[in-house]
Length: 264
Ligand code: SAM
Image 1 (spheres, rainbow, N blue to C red):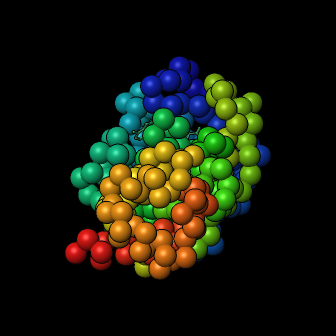
Image 2: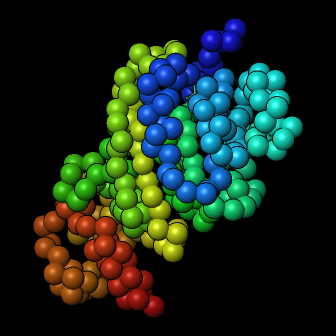
């Protein structure tokens, strides 16, 4: 490893396990999409990715930029590799997408903003596949199925926007330097590029899960007229005692449409 101290504030846990690095490369979809990596770190994953495809990497840490520029000087000069020195969330705020053509995101994400990054990538119209290392706990939230105790907004949004979502494999702390305190997983999401969800739907889900172990009807009663609510539950054949994690993603979508229409 380069003579550099990992920075906690940037979620730096460098992947040092070649088997895991190769596992990520094997999971790469066989297509012509461009690649975007977030947080190339010392460039170990980048080095493998750039052999296959042209790519852009977003890195926030100034100390790593010099190392990456010299490591990938040749690839930068021949335009195979573009290195952007910025906070990736700020880049999304400015331009809505991380690349102007279709791309796949492949990365070992900084865990402190992993959920945000995945949600932004799900909204980014040009991003088709998301293959990322994150905390196992968060991966389970994105891939949970109805009735699982982890089933909530993240899984619902992921299910409505993807055609496939799964955990590919788990990665133990010893595969990193420094070792994180948690087990990690490689999350795979394949998006349906024709789908989107609006911010009001996300706000609706927030209300539905405001008290996750309470009845859904109780959570919704705080925001929705009682008569409208009982009509919607009746129309959709939803039991009044149901808990938020027991309702499917498509039923949430239908419920939202009825709430919106009922209010107009
Ligand atoms: N890809 C490297 C690897 O696998 O060893 C490093 C992964 S490390 C878990 C996360 C990386 O994301 C670090 O390089 C860190 O500096 C970078 N990072 C953290 N916050 C970021 C942000 N807001 N925007 C872009 N990069 C960020």
